[in-house]
Image 1 (tube, rainbow, N blue to C red):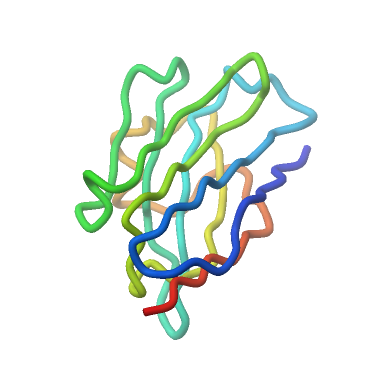
Image 2 (image 1 turned 135 degrees about the vertical axis):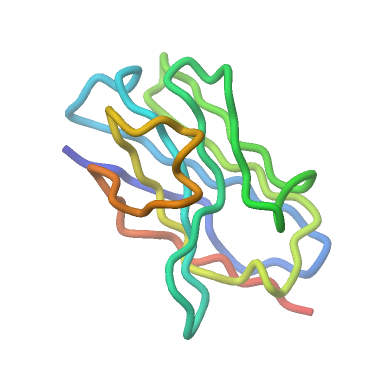
Length: 125
């Protein structure tokens, strides 16, 4: 079982990036998917989650209106489109998934089943 994230990089403030994360070794549609991030010197924190079908999405307040999470169950991939990036978005972004925990509860927990290795996003001012 593996989560492989990609798409991180260096971008100027106001720019955009799209992160992708592919799940292998499991039935993707069985998993709630989401993203956390860990900024330098800070704890890992919830960013966004998406339900099994993609019909429900949830975001931390600081990214609402700028980030969009989506999934393609045919490609076993979840995406995080990040627009209007700010220096405070600089962090390592982790893809994660879980079969049981509702996407609506992810903002208050970090005990998901499977975690990817993370991809670094750096936003320069």
